Length: 488
Image (cartoon, rainbow, N blue to C red; front, side, top):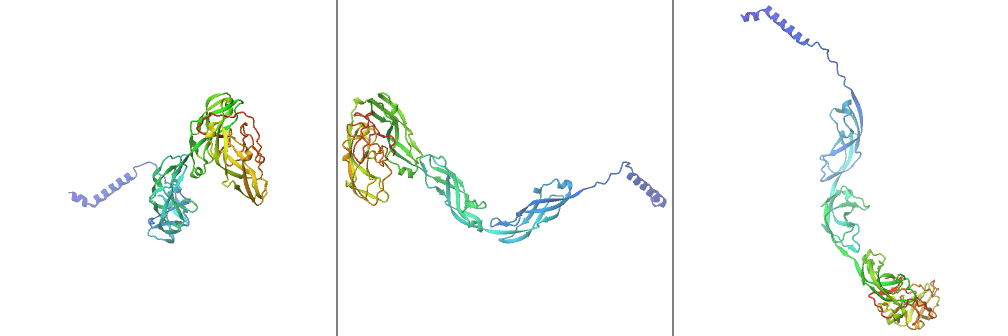
């Protein structure tokens, strides 16, 4: 029955019409407003200074030493919304160096753009590069200490492990390496310096670091010995000021006999035999015993002196309660002074060019005198060529006087060549003395006051000074007393 319906031509046409009506209805069922067409805007944009990124080079053997440019300019196109999303850093020009060896080559660049952006043009689109082969060379390592150790200490020679390293650079740069060096901070160290890892850098002759250098190993271990540079020297008391009339210095006793001077080896080797502490006598206005503090004078060029000051016990008594003591110092050298330009002067008598000097004064000062505290000066200024007998000028520390007639101290001097009068005044009370102590102050004869009277070198006459602080017998001291201004 169904077969008849299907095979009937009229029935088939009716079914086809019904299906067509259903399909038309489905298409036109939505009665809403049809959607409008979307308009898309495209723009061009110029990107300056796009970086060139090189890759693929075998950096274990080669280095890209030069490239005629490292940036390009790109013109790109894309939707406005896309172009405004990206910055210049999102654009690159790639340079492929894979498989290349040493030499100079011109190679194409490949743009690397963000999604949604297309290239319009790239300038330049090729680049010329030079590739160099790396070379390796061994260098000795040096260490540069920066800073100063504690005062009185000196750095020794650094001990470096290992002593040599290998430096890898392009040949053109390797030939410029002059030093491979590490720096260590030694400021304020007080004992042996040790540092296990000191970073190394390679430098050329201009002191510029070669930043591309590969150093193996890149660090070394460093030890620097530290030695103490100090010298113990005696402490000598020098005097300033005056005691009042009627008082005498009876006892001077310092709590320190030696001080340590810290300095470089050159300074220590040139130090004289003592350091000084100045005792101001004007602070003592009455008899009695007082302990005062006095600073030690650090020698020129020294780092420090320890201790920096000393305690001095001073006993002052009435002048009529003490007496003097005597002593003879042997072998005082005779010093020539005032020779003219071009003159050659020598002492011919006494043959040993030395003389003995007998002095008196407070026991503590006299007992601690040394030959450095006494001077004998032959002033030959104004003398012509030939042989002359010259009266010697005696230089003594303060409160020490010479016993005997100063005019009897004479030396024979032979002068060869011209002699020009010296500028110095032979009668000057403050004449410089090369032997130390207050050498310019001449002392009166025995029995006269000892406040710095002047003994004339030419006449032998003695100018007696007012007896204000003449010290006497019974003084005791653990250090030497000399006049103010005595220096090591």
